Length: 290
Image (cartoon, rainbow, N blue to C red):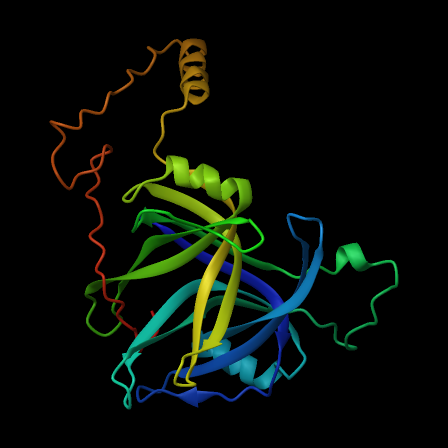
């Protein structure tokens, strides 16, 4: 597995579900899900709001959604982030939209309908909005400072998807590019330690920001607001000690630690012998499910 691109949300469908058919007869629908949120800022302020997500559902899962999901239904959805891009017919500018392509859908409402939340249940009513990616950093980290003095850093992480085309049996591959935003002390740690090309795990919530251009046109960008970042492929003394101790207890020779030689290592081959992924700079949209 080259990379990880996973997102999970629990939220509410905002409108009636309309299922359509592709020319090949496959059912598809776009759910519009709102996820309320509440969290504390670095200054201890409680911030409340809601995020909106487009979730594309294919096949028999789309048929089930069309039959049973109603406006206001509470849903669990998991899948992957996918960005589709196109050229604006009027301005010829490159446009893009990020959505969730669903792999799992669970309807959460009881048969007798939703209940009123107990007055004491505030701590139990947080909704799920979680994204996790493992991929290569596509550009050097960019640090900014807000007007109130907070550090905020932006990095790009590329993941890739591989699948077999159902019609031709051919293996295909597509790269996805994720904007990851990191705040505070974690931002400073990432800036000092992470470089372009390194592999990272990042975890956080999905957020879409909207704004208007000078011409009055609406624009949106989807980001992962990360609260956890792990630098991957790093040597760990604690882990190697544990491996050596287990080997000794099993009566086996301790593993030999390999030293990476930057000058002699073949170009384009990672330390474990797996070829590095070549990420393209242009996002390609996928019309059919896989």
